[in-house]
Length: 62
Length: 248
Length: 249
Image (cartoon, rainbow over all chains, first blue to last red; front, side):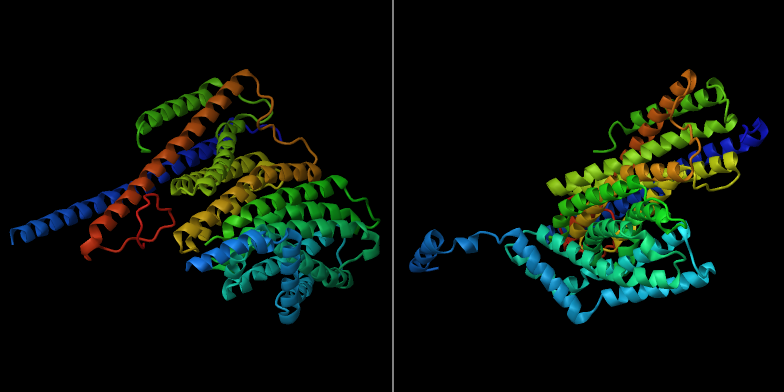
């Protein structure tokens, strides 16, 4: 096939590069979700540890 | 253990039982395992009849699906090999199921035999099932769908079948062991084996196509060689990795 | 730790990728035979090569896992396959776009790279289902490693066979994908290769850091849960456990 003129080939090339960027950004979004979950769990566990310490201090006092 | 007992054990080790300490020879073990496999199959008829029946039904399906009374050339090659492939995958699924469900693995692991012997025995058993499958399926194909005479493809077709069987046996043993102790083993077996078997189909189909043409062409030797090399590579891989699948 | 030097690496990658894009669109000349459409090759081919190397690297990591029995090699292999799968999807889509532009169809069987890639992706798509189907973590890791090694060997073999069969069945001049590129195009191509390879490494380390952190959180949770049952349930995941802290999931 003879080379496509710019105005027909252009959209395809752009589409390919958009796909590339989109994939990277989708990945970043998924990782962001995981990061926020880690953040949340860390918060829960910190709370838990604080509670355990409080309980232990109560028992020491008793 | 009492002192006397220990003494006796030590004496036994020194004098009496070298045969107990030495692992049995590979050939003997493989032979014994293979005989067990074949005997079980003959008694229960789990795999081979189903595979054969499946292939014949598939030919009927192809007749209706392709709307052809007879096929030749690449179409014939394709129908034959795809059917054999799917029937073989059925057999792969069943290969380890009995062992997994009835503790055959544990029994084998407790024995002093070399673990690769099990791999070899299973592969040989699968090879045998495939041979029997083809003894039924290929004539059925010739009867139902093949537009040219089957004899014109002989004996080249036998070589192709043998090599293809080797590939399926090697990959089937590996994938069967991999899939058998998963939850969805009936799905994972085919899912894992089919991509790995595509090159076998590529090689076999490209070899068979000229054999089914009218007038008959020569089999492209380079594809036979490719098929053989593929078999070799994955036989080595299967042999090397099988051990890791048996441990528990 | 996987997060160290990640920021620097990521910035370097971003810089190189920008340079690549500038090179592709402002510096490299248009190809005589394929015209502007050829520019797709500057990401399609490096993506493909990096994906394949990623799969093979995962196989090597799996070999290490089987040899040493350490869970972290299994994790590395798992993440490598993950990242390569994502890149592989990119390869298939960009390849398909190119095929539409060059041949008018969204899929062509005469393009061996695409066909071989489809086959490889079909195989690796079974990796996650395989892992999820095995409960026992050690057996899961071992099965996954056996799979990764087998599949890693399959990748180059498959490429060779598909290429041979395509040449056999469609004997016309094949893609001029990686062959003789004149001067400037070659520079941009290699630049693109390096950038995308670095991108793979960056994403790999990124995901390793995230998984490692999750695993450490799980360990922390187990350590704290000795006498407390108010914990919310842990989500099941196919990711391997690298912390070595025992206990039931």
